[in-house]
Length: 159
Image (cartoon, rainbow, N blue to C red; front, side, top):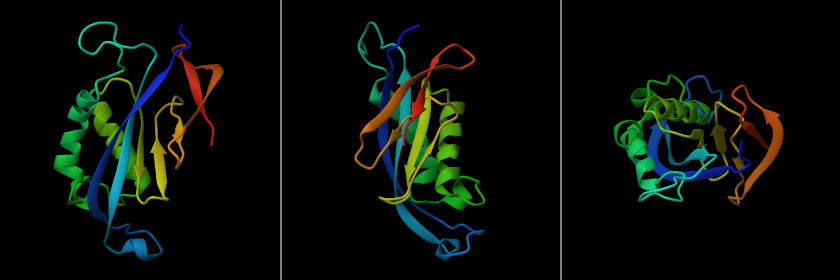
């Protein structure tokens, strides 16, 4: 086992509308956002040879997984219809993107961050390897000595 851990992120942006039908405030009405997101990929090792030597993953390869979601479901769409989410909260959208990327087989998928506004942020992950990026974009990760079922060392979130 290695103590090395890399975490890379690919930022994306999209314009979209939604409404939250169960919300008790103004978000129950149709409205839009300039959404920002980041997909995080982690690895214990880097590519050892070839054109991508020294990388976790080529950012352009990561974009190939993400672009179809942007083109077909997210950018300039009404999210209640395009995603099939009845109430597309930031939390639901982050989980939806994660699930779609996981279904597509994106290796090393660790977390998806969605910024609904510049001050309202959601980070979704299925595992404890995800770190939290604060508003200053500094990565706060703490290596714990806890192991998960497959023996990997977990990274624990510090907020």
